[in-house]
Structure formats: structure tokens, C-alpha cells
Image (cartoon, rainbow, N blue to C red; front, top):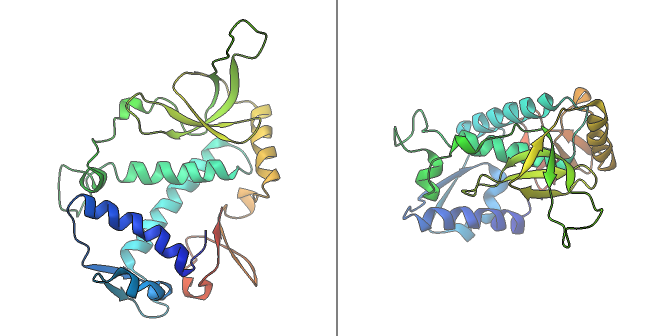
Length: 243
């Protein structure tokens, strides 16, 4: 993804639709200067732009918190580098869990932001049955069943799918592809499994986490690490963001 006008509109439209579906009217959007190109497209909603080299504090603090949470999740796996599927899943899990509790200074002491905006029931923590980055064997259904094909697949646990059955997303250790399942067998994480994770990450040119972050701005002047100290976003206008 990048921050071109077309991409910004494509990303912000579902947010507007979600709020409108719950009866909320968006009066104002706080943003930095790179969002100026969509000002006419979101009318009658006002676009309040901050000054150059100034940022929306609430957004910056939220981003910093998410980066710290994602960093903790990725480092807990034990691999020196991780595939993009795991980085994306860690961000999804961090966002889901942070929105599952009532905000300290929010409009409700009992309803979480997720429940208010989406109308979904609160997160059922009884469905959080496997830890992010755990090594498991996923049951697969062969048809016909009376063959010598494997009955399980090596996989890494990612994040819940969000359904009521308590299913999870997993990363296939052979292909690196994401898949969902509701039956699995927890296994011991070995050095061989970690090597497979690093092999998949290396094939995607993912960086060593101990040498730098897993997320970058890609610009004409080279890769710019996205860290807690990366605050001059205006200089990266239009640059693609990748993991």
C-alpha cells in the first residue's frame, strides 16, 4: 500500500461506512498534510490539517503503543526474522485486543470501542486458546480418507478469525500461506521450526529484527525504518509502506 490519493480514499471509505452504519456522523477528521488531497472527497466532513512537522498526538500515541505491542509479540517467537504474514497478524491481534476494552477516557465505562463502532459482542477471551507464534499441527480433511496422505500440517498460530467457533488463522510452515482451522495439536517449538520461519522470512527479504525494525517506508532515497522515533512523516509523502 501507499499514500497516493486513490489509495487513501480506498482505505478511508470503509471507515466512514462503518461509522455511518452505526448511526454516527463524522463531523471532522484530524490528519497531517498528506491527507490534504482528499479534502474535497470527504465533504461535508471537515478535514482539520495540522501544521507541517506537527502531528495528531492521539494518533501518534496510539501508533507508538501498537508498535510496542507488535514488537513484543514478534520478539516472543524467538526467530531472528519473521515472514510478512506474522507481522500483519501481530498488528491485527494488537489492534483487536486494544479495542476490546473500554477506553480510559472514552464515552463509555462498560462498552469497548469495538462494540460501540461495530456492534459486535465483546471479545470472548475463552476463545484465545493458543499463543501467537506457537507451533501446532493442524488437522486436515482428506477426501478420500483412506490414503497415505498426511493428516496434519506444520503451522504457526497467528490470530483468531473472530467467528463464534473459536477458529484461528495459522501460517503454513511449508508455503508461508495463511489458513484457518478450528482443530490443532500444540507442539514444542524447536530450533528446526524456528529455522523454517526464518527461511520463509528470508525468501521475502524480511530484515533481521535484532538489526532493525520489520517495517519500512520505501522511498526513492532508500528504505527508511519505521520506529518509535520516526516522526517526520511529511517527508515521506506518497512513499509506500511495507512490512
